[in-house]
Image (tube, rainbow, N blue to C red):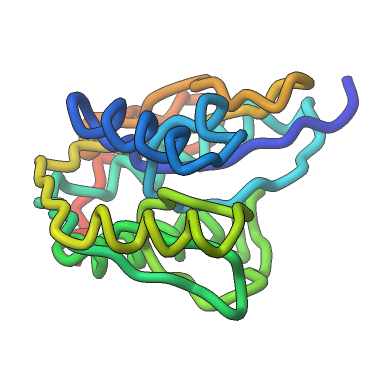
Length: 192
């Protein structure tokens, strides 16, 4: 079956997702239309395609333990000069995102991996574009605000065309782990 590139993230819902995606494209980020607006829980990761069922079982277990939490975005930040990224800040829900990403990457699961940088939940609005456009993104979105109840996360796969497509959603607290996985979890751990 070969390898596939996957990612796990919390989608930024409408109308916020489309608005931020359009703004990202408007700043000159050519990848904008191939990347749904999101908060990353697992960055792009290559896995054996045959491992996807085990990955889905693992993510269902993580989701079963989660609970909905408020997400709020406010203002901008940047990873420059370490990384050419401007982002909208997660000012509420960051602790829950950190809890989730640790469980997604748990050493006992199929998605164990080290991160290149310490985890910092955010919504990218400009990446790898010229400095003037990065500055513009930083300034124009400095007063951006959005909020919603986060009720789950999703598994995405990057296609050969570079576009990320949702494979499956994992709602919190209601995921049932298939019996062939050897255990069924009802989940009671908080996301905080």
